[in-house]
Image (cartoon, rainbow, N blue to C red; front, side, top):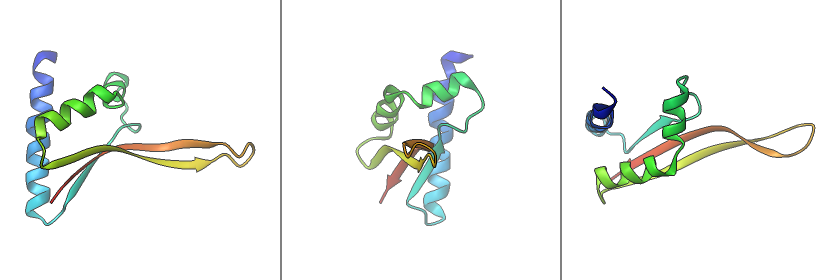
Length: 90
């Protein structure tokens, strides 16, 4: 079944994008860090997945990571609290 997962993902993604565009939206977010399945989270967090989505969707779409940062109140260091794949279109 794993051989068909990328095709199912892209097919589902196309449907989500189509429905969102029909409702007037100009983008879609895919959560990366909040996914409970370790395998899927690692794959979504891999730069190669981002490149593959860009390749499959084409030049009319902008695909990039969008990260939300917070600051540790004790050390003052920044850390990522949320990471999403941001897909936009016009």
